[in-house]
Length: 104
Image (cartoon, rainbow, N blue to C red; front, side):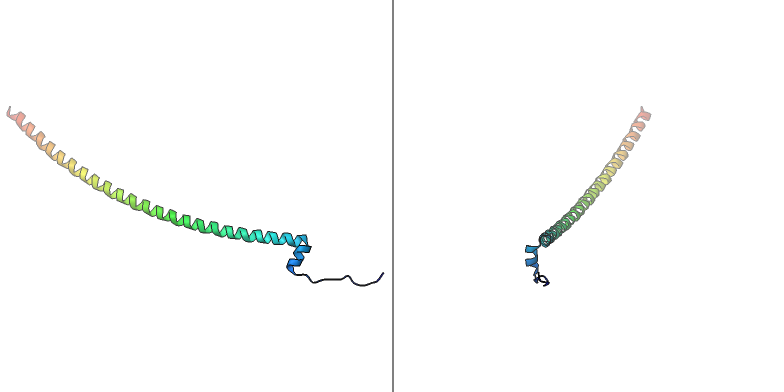
């Protein structure tokens, strides 16, 4: 038996992954992590796009609500004017009826 040290060999990452199952697994996990990071980026972009669409929809809803509010306000004013006109006409009619009763 000789007391020679065992032969050592310098290995690169690809060589080490082939010879060492732990390194191969590490590379696979790293690739999966990078893939997941890409997916997370896509999801974030989609969420931002959805957020912008929601903001746009809310603005449209606010504009429509304001338009309806203005239209209802005008209708309320018109109804109040019509009511006042009827009250004036009815009051005049009532007064005329009372006057007629006094005559008879």
